[in-house]
Length: 81
Ligand code: FES
Image (cartoon, rainbow, N blue to C red; front, side, top):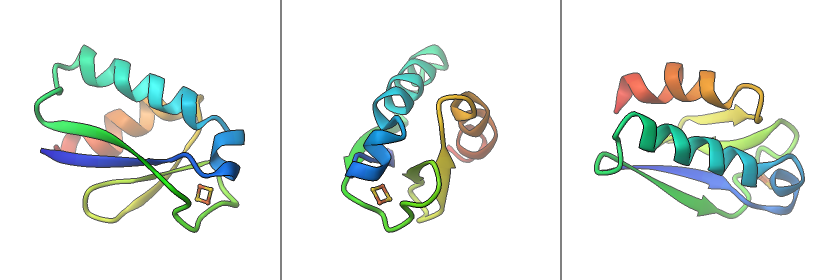
């Protein structure tokens, strides 16, 4: 099981971490990845100046907003699961 940590620290919360979580949840279900990947909430990941910080299981931090969430998931997450 691979883990994706979505920052829910205050800066990321304001930038829409709830929406990013919702979009990722829907994509995981759409692609039937429930037993391959899990979503975890995380405190500040130290990259507050960009969009919502999402840490992939290998430590790569992706900068995600609701507009690019689907694209990032399909290009930067799905191929590596
Ligand atoms: S609050 Fe999310 S990276 Fe700092």
